[in-house]
Image (cartoon, rainbow, N blue to C red):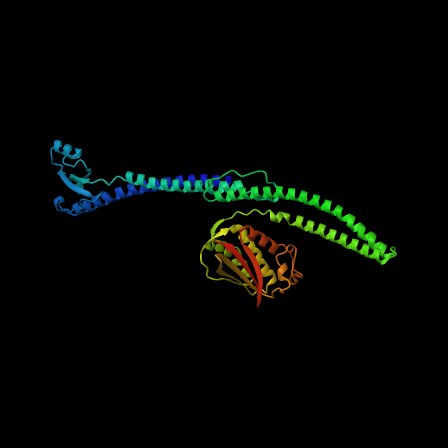
Length: 428
């Protein structure tokens, strides 16, 4: 910011220096042109007089600024009063200026020539206009620099430390509102991001605390059935029971304890995904066309770099109901899966209508899942046979289904001849 202030100061100094130089040059040029015009004309007339021409025979270039307008002659034989009046400018228009020069014949003075001329137009007004224009240009440039400082550099200076603070987890200090047309919305968005991160941090801390408590409790509860299974299995191994009925009863008890463990494991899984059930959805109306523009902006460049054929069929720009931001998350997940599990050939979006619902169909080429695996595709922590060697946790499609259910929509999958197809169902 200090460097920019110095830049503004130097612009002002250089601007005034240039204005002063231009003014001095204009004044000097005006004076030289004034002197040159009538002096050149007078020299021409004197040359003709000395060549023997009579004053009355000389043609004058009258009417021009700085040119000789009238030519008067008085001889030395005139009475002193006439000569005095001649020198005082008698007969010369008050708007004109004049000059008197002696004329000699040989070495003898024969008389005087009086040259009157219209003065060169005053250049002061022209110089003032020029200076005013230059000052306005300088003022405009300084105003532009001040505008850049106040509307761009100052707001940017305010937010330049925020990303670093967020990366360090410093979420308590907010940002002041800014009316900058360039960064106002950006600053507001950053502060909203900070508040969201802070809120999510508190939620995560609370969930983590509850999860740790639950896991500790369930882990403690697991010890009892595990200890019983170990005891009963040890008894069976050592052949402690002397009858088949007792051995069967022991096996039944082992099965019951295993079911108890299975129930506890289910509780742990439920606790692990419980935070996903509390995802906040902000349903509202939005246009399909605007949403697709955002989707295209997010993925077009990446898919082009991967050389995947990305096709969006024609669509009716209808008004839909749901959370457009969460719907983008759903599409992000589906496209990521298409890249990860597809063959990299094609991803296609098409659009259909069914039962007053908008269907968005996402198809990708590659090996489809088997019919036996499809019922589990939206189950949490489940991964298909095509996931071997690929990173993931089996939650992506589960989250997609949860989000669409909260939008009063749905998602289902089906294999196609050369890949997979996912269909999103949305409300109008």
